[in-house]
Image 1 (tube, rainbow, N blue to C red):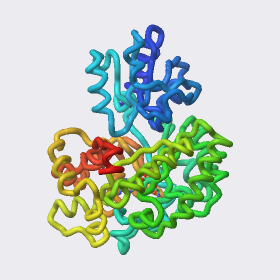
Image 2 (cartoon, helix red, strand yellow):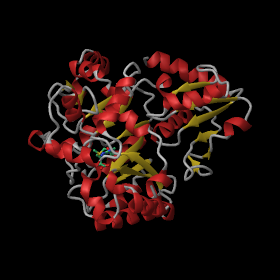
Image 3 (cartoon, protein in one colour):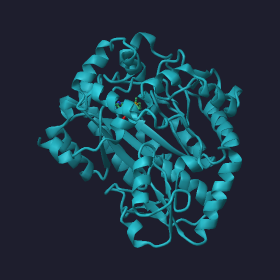
Image 4 (spheres, helix red, strand yellow):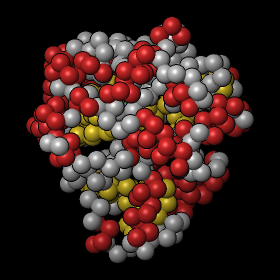
Length: 421
Ligand SMILES: C[S@@+](CC[C@H](N)C(=O)[O-])C[C@H]1O[C@@H](n2cnc3c(N)ncnc32)[C@H](O)[C@@H]1O
């Protein structure tokens, strides 16, 4: 897809909007990005659809968030599916209601061919057990921070090559709050019509007020366990600091930006179920934070691919995999069974703090994973061309590893059973 076909897609939505109610399924970062682009193009929208109880009934970007039942009550609707890993599941739900792809619904990836993530911080304050920053300590990428000036140049290039980008994520391997210019970056993104997502361990003593005042659209908080349990997988993390910062962030949200989505992304290990899980569920309800538990996985795909290729896991990854609730080999088998499905992240362009571009955002180590040394010097079409022929991609797909993160992120879970087995 290119600029022309994206323009055609937007024009066809405009046409549909004159006769039907347009709904965006997903009130998170992707959905808000699409909303921004459609609103900028003067297209009237009915609202968002989201399954999250914390979101339903709220207003986001001036629109109501409905539960999925709205599809049964409205007659002439057109749905834009705007979620990252759940596109297939939601498509099935639409089809079960007799809706036809292209006619009655489209997916976000049909409308917008590329997503961007910018790791504005190349440093992290923690060494989480499942992260390559701990397993690959000796090969760690050089730490550093993207400057505001470079960030502005990156966004200018993104907008000139992909004018329909309405959202970006400002993290991947680093802790974004450590970048002192993060608030100004968020503000600059707004000037360019782009909404920002950040994900934080909330374990840094930084000025959260300035960050929230800059109004990031989506704030993910990562955690795994209550009290001392938190510190097992979030290695070097301090529970009291985390807890205090969560209270601060939620009260700043209430003060400065009630529409900001805070999602508590809770990593499920054996030690973070039961009482820990229950307390977190209640805590999120008390602070009006969306609770999103997920099965923890080894996020170091470098290690997992090597494992599939016959190289033993490094010690920290072994330790993490022993604590995982959803077994590594089982997850890899499930991913392999889906190997014929496309890769969810090929559409994502990942720019590191030093401006290098990764072939794949899910791999940390730069060797064999660098599509460009400097994003600013190379046209996006050339970057995409290089990524198409990348040998890391071929190795990953051969093992079905491109489905691995999705398998863990979308696997159904029953919270009540995990609280009291
Ligand atoms: C490596 S973190 C870096 C960003 C930030 N420092 C943080 O902690 O949120 C990037 C994302 O990976 C997710 N993540 C980290 N470990 C994970 C695990 N074991 N399973 C699932 N997701 C994980 C985090 O929740 C976060 O959204």
